[in-house]
Amino acid sequence: MTDVTLERTSPEMEYATVSRWLKREGEPVTAGEVLLEIETDKVTQEVVAPVSGVLRAIHAVAGDEVRVGEAMGTLDQGPDASPAAA
Image 1 (cartoon, helix red, strand yellow):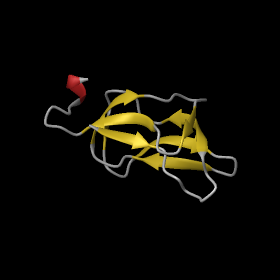
Image 2: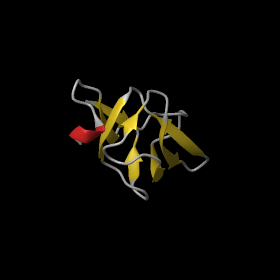
Image 3: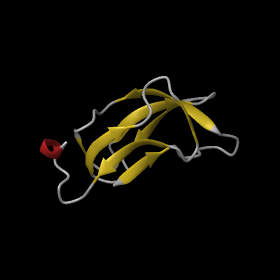
Image 4: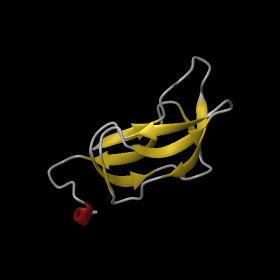
């Protein structure tokens, strides 16, 4: 399992707000594919999948504020990572 975490994109960034998820739990994802959008006080950004697999869990939904380093979702890239196993 791999967490999708909020990465710091500027020195002063401490948190962001989840705008919307483009994938749903149980859907397959490819490394580099856009999973969700977040908003900071300055910009809206896309968050991409760090690995290929299946989106197993969404921990932060639209409107939730997350801190840098916090997990927003979890990807499963193990041998059983198939949408049917969701």
